[in-house]
Image 1 (cartoon, rainbow, N blue to C red):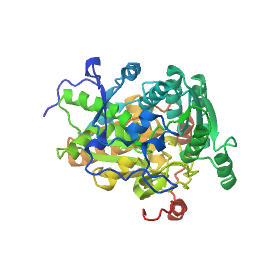
Image 2: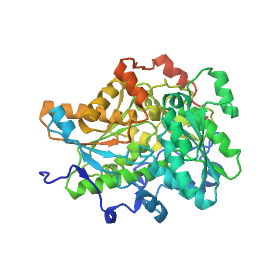
Image 3: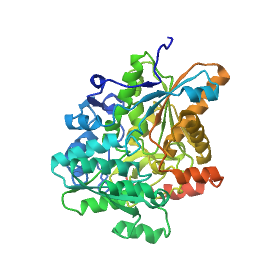
Image 4: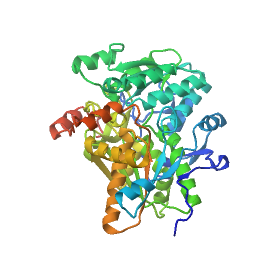
Length: 461
């Protein structure tokens, strides 16, 4: 069908805004394997999650039947500060590529955190405040989640301790400044402030850290602090639930103009952005309807989907968390300090891992960071927005798909998620512009060290 009179940017009216989150698990043909208690190997029960997560989030984490969950009015009001986010037609990029493809991107960088992370941060802190929790802890890689959480915490009146991956804190010092401006206490991880941090430093002197390390420290502080809980910005099921606002808005906007994407692309680290974007379109596939071709894009330096194992693993380096069945490189895997800090997690969302394992997500690709920055630079020069390195993974794949359309003459509609801006990633762009950026791809021997750290669970794997 011809696409006529489509604006450059598609916004929703307030009356069109989603009032619910979509729970993808309610439509999955088969659920992912349950979260396990590492001490017993038995499925985690709801009350066993309460020492770590607030009660409402724990309930959302284990809910596999409620298709649509109401967004509380207080969160809807918070969303009004920066949502709906724009859905943009990349006309200038299309022209530069000389492609017949139509390229759209959902831009989540219109808030101070510069990313989609605020969608779940607001929800998690709202529920914590409602329960009477007085402080929370978290980890952050690139700093987007930490910044988003700091914004939510100051809005709802909550104290925040952030453990920021050390390599990212060194690359992006201004992220730390923004978090502190919003009242957060920020510590580079691994640190000497926790027992697990001391242990990791003793075993890996000079390490730049990882999201797994920072998670361990944040959880240790949470469980040893009165009236405190841990909050996570990706991977877990309730986070994907909150991020479904991205895909719901996108589908409503495109449906207004009778547009249905042929390809949907998202960068993949822990899975929150990818899961949020593809959710409503994945429902079509699960319902047996026509659906897009789904592509997940991850860094070659941390290739959990493309080179990982589908196995039970800890979500953190210190082996504190419950066990999750996911594509993983092993909790002991230490990724190189590349510039896509938000994608340096050793595992992948259990929901997305299951969908990929069962063939519902069509393809996973890994890409070196120099190619990612080739794409990021082209996008910045044509579309006028400097993308985050994480987002640029999706841009790279969108460009590759558009080039294929140029070769074949197909007029496909390509949709990707632009998760955030790169204005705190200027050291990465400096390195790229100076020609000093290097590409690291772990060897099979490097990966084996991580696989050797996978837990041995009798009767499970």
